Length: 392
Image (cartoon, rainbow, N blue to C red; front, side, top):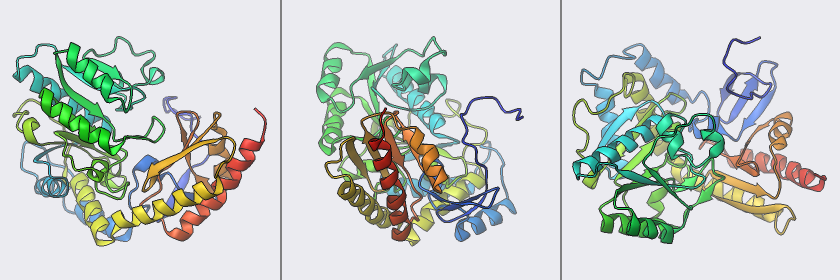
């Protein structure tokens, strides 16, 4: 019996090694990984260039402290700003830490403007993390239940509803920022309309608010652009990253630009491990390999192949509510809870996930080949068809 805290309903499988989009369990069975550690393993498993870079860095330096200059961290910050158009970067260890930094930055931004109780607009069904502040920002009672009192200072509105935000603007003069995921991952792969983000940018400019985009799950090339918002012409004031940034090595980032830049001063925020040489090398190497191997355009091509395949197979299928996504972040919504499909797919040698109870979520590594994508289709489609044909 394990002495681990009982915080996860774990599946009965343990993996020993992997290669590319494949994993092997302790019994030698092979699995196609269409989840990538929940959008983490950008380069799949055991990528030779990535492994070599980490081995070299481990042999040189793993950790010092942010008391000192960290060369690798500075190089990563420069690269992130080059591909994003942002101006400055705070490095941490996870998505919730990146979002905590964004929330703190927004509050300090508000206080600097003379607002004593700064409020942040957040969305229904959002997910921003499990720390006290980020679970308060999260739009899920399931995540929040049992951890009250929640952190104050969040105003919740429906996802993809600009009029609701305009109503808040008219009545709440303590708002300082809007925090939103361009694609809600945990909320069921719900995508924002391009025009929504563009108009939200205009509203934030008119009101003097910060536009803060949580790209923890949908960023880092998964949609075919470095960041999901780059399918529009806007630039956020704050952007948070994590998950796929280090291809499995924990690293998060909070980026700032425009009126948000320069808000934090020495002593305002920090992280013991954030931006250490190993994590920074992992992130920088991930970005370099993505460029060298053209993984952004590859994500678009393979994502289009999967989406087209699912839409052809499930065209007018009773029980399939919607097939949505962009690049390699894909959701298939069914008309009934489908959590059982995770175990059924596992038995067929495929790793998938179900979120929001009724949405099959696919987040494969960006190195997935078209032949492997066809295997995903060949396993998922019959499983869904069989599942839907069964009674409740």
